Image 1 (cartoon, protein in one colour):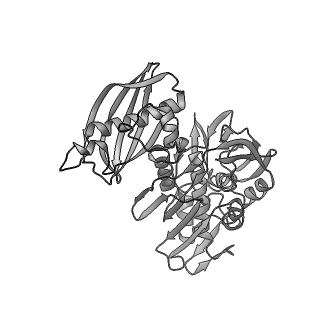
Image 2: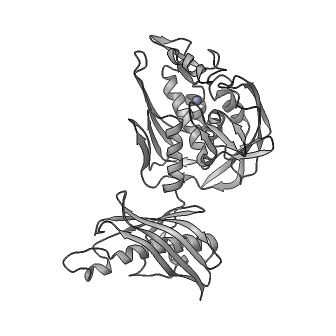
Image 3: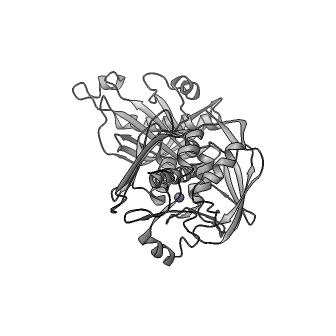
Length: 414
Ligand code: ZN
């Protein structure tokens, strides 16, 4: 568990939008420890979540009910890098002000006005490797005890062929090593960007400009561009809506790949909280040899992920089969359903209740499961009635689907 943080008092920032070139103002207000980061414009609240992203070309744009806010990534990076989990950002204008092109003007003031809440938050603590890639670019995450980012940029450019940085993000390292890094552009792309209606407010005052044989204006770090990539990545990672614990490697990535990564974390990843065996036994009555879940490694409002290690000592291998050990497909289905039952009773309470199958549909078995395999069991809630629960489930071994189907359970009083 991590502490939730907000700001002590309303803090205002004013300036010009980097891409629109228009004046704008934002006020970061304190918020109670439940709602996360929320933008507010013209009376419409837009949660800082990936579901509301509508554009990722050169900046990240949030939109809801026709209200649109451009270039949210630098203020979000400042909040996320400093561990601020809750705030309301009132926006007057179409875009977040560019300030000096970095997150430092935001981060300095926010850092001096941090306030800790009593409420805690479960961070998204990465449990299984996950990533997205394509076109020589990638973003991937692996388990690690702290938020650590390794980033690389790569260009076909004589002065800036590549840069690399790796560091652990704490409020102090963020403020010192990342927040000051400004957005950057290559001399030859400035005209093209302006032609596309972007960078209208860009200047040598709010961007690092890179020429064929060096920086046009004074850099703040020799590797300022790759540091800005880390700044942007953190701003986009904020759209996960939870603090993150793990190691992220980003190669030649930009906003669209960052967002694809965040969506995959939220919709397919395993990030805790963990439910251990002792608690599992309190939630469902299954016991040896029929308890087929060792641990839950992810739970949220609509999904859960569990693990079952398959060992040679499983009871069922004695007869299935004496000369060829393979896990019965129906038991894989049973294991998936047990993850569903554990998650359901953990969330809604299970006192005096049990879950039974009411139907299984579209079940497919694609690969044999043998001793030594680790079954990763995913369930997603499709519908919850007063007594019937429908979910989609699948079991994976080494990222390969071994079984999948649609399961309906009836919740019975006993
Ligand atoms: Zn940026």
